[in-house]
Image (tube, rainbow, N blue to C red):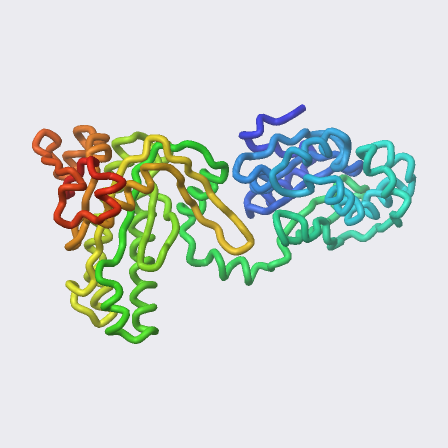
Length: 398
């Protein structure tokens, strides 16, 4: 029977296998539990999330780990052994253990796995190790990533085999993984997973950039200017994450962020979070300047805030980076608004401000009945691109 794809698998009935499955679950492993015949009894949520790129992959329970039903499911997975070649690699990694548990009966094993994998059985040699480590996926997995597996056989008090437990890990190792994620905020990591599959997502958009960066870079040593930029983006990311947003790309001294209505609960909450993040970052600039040996007036940020009703938001993960990006006219318009916010202003579009409802507007101290707007193209600080591309966007200071 297939699970819902969204709910956790129930623990196995056998108490020893249930204990193992519970340990895998509680330690957030990529883990599987199979019975003595290699029928799948349990797969951790983290494993299913990884196979489905953020959406738990619907997996059949009760069939052989490399049986026809599971093989068909792997082929639909975003990651993992989702090609015939990778499934063959997986069988070669585990096949000796499978054959040993079948008492060396090749035909019995062949009858239970997917037909397209049957030819591999003749290459296998029985392997009856209690604990084994194998390379189960090669360099074609999600780019150039290899996956290692550790198998531990579970026996009852009489020495009878009741099943096996699998733990999978990337070949990078825990030290390397820890170095990459040790400073990541778990809340933001989860938000990245929430947009693993790109789609249209209404959101508030924040663009911020350091004004007068060229003169600063000439005044300061390269090392000092780099330290300033690092402090600035760390402060920006912290403010965005604390407000419930998702950090987009960093370009030079600039920061982009998105505040999704689906994450924050409403369009009004998204607009409020965007404005609060901008205000928090403006307040944080004083400490950034002080730690960099500068006056607060030396570190001036300009902000452009806008609403995106139809922007296409998604997470792009490659071998070199992992970031959220968005496409759409409103993203380009937000950049135009930011470029016009000279003098350290925070300009928000009418489209964003009027997403606010009473309580959120009141919390921000904004009286929606008294807001006065100007056309972007009419501002003294309007850039040529703004006058060309977005002259009639109504904006106000927030």
